Length: 318
Image (cartoon, rainbow, N blue to C red; front, side):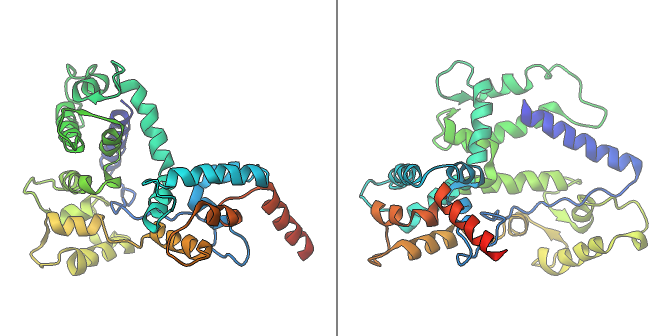
């Protein structure tokens, strides 16, 4: 239901913008790797960046209210969860996966919220029928809107994505598969559907390709005089010709579109995992024990003690 309403609102905004003949706000179709924190990463000053990277922004605030003893205790419990193979060590990969999980906590919260309204029979799975009825059941008999929005097409598109998210092809989605359905950009096996849906949004003539006019038209109303185009539009035209259209055939195909919207970004989680392991690995064996992590608890998590120490340091500056 929420996805459907949001899509309708977004489409409506775009249609209004076109009707008024005004430039649309530039869309960013590119899926970037989100920074782990907006704070400066300077361990010489404090470990605030590391706290938000390791815990997530909201959870880091919670730890700031704990005593050192409470902070260490909770950190120890986190270590047990990080040690996925239960071998008594946290590997670099396990550290990386934990950081990615902490950063995506808002996604899991969104899924939990939507799960309640779609697992109608309470069997811990969401079938396509359950999702379809909850999302489209009340509008399927309605005529398509004057803006050309086809509810049936939207439903067919969702069904295609749902079936792709159903990784074991058993006809229904467990919690992880439902997450992949709602947030496909977060899963490697769903990347193709992200590209296909993007191309369908932009490809107005239905030839399965994106030409220059379609590329620019997705982000700017091209009905006006080119002389009045903002500088960023001219830059985007150059980007398409020089970089997006790699084989210089005047179009972007599936591979070229994928390279555009899903670039190989810098892996922030991997870099932070390497940093945390390096700073905590006292015996330099490339992996961490619980004791090594808890001994460096101030690097991983905050507490009232560390906050108090930073407050004293700031006080001394004045």
